[in-house]
Every structure is written in structure tokens, then in C-alpha cells.
Figure (cartoon, rainbow, N blue to C red):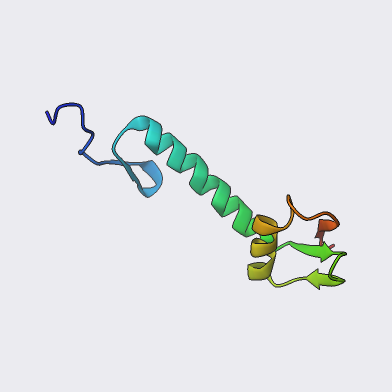
Length: 81
């Protein structure tokens, strides 16, 4: 219809709007990962041994998980139990 351009948006389950099935599958997996990550961050804390800090705030935990956990040594995710 538009010469191979995917300009028709389709509304899939779980309120995902995408132009093709592959994009919808990617968005579904990504949104699932993000929602699990947000829920998980409420129940853990970050022990940063280089700065001698214990991060407990869920927003700061999310930031620390994104930025520090894979790059910086001596940063650990711990359960609050």
C-alpha cells in the first residue's frame, strides 16, 4: 500500500501499539523486563563498598542497578530480608 513502508499501527494486547509483529514482540518483552525490574527494586538494597554506602531508596536503587552494578567493582545487590 505504501511501497513497503510500515505506516499502519496495530493495537496489540497489553496496550502495545506497533507497526509490525516483530516490533510488538520486542516491546512486549522490554515492557515486561522494565515492570519486573521496578517491582524487584523495591525489595533489594545496594551495598556500595567503594563509597561505604547502603542504598535503600527504590529510585536510587534503580539508578544504581542501571549505572554501577555491571561497571563498578564492589557494588552488590542484596535482599532486604
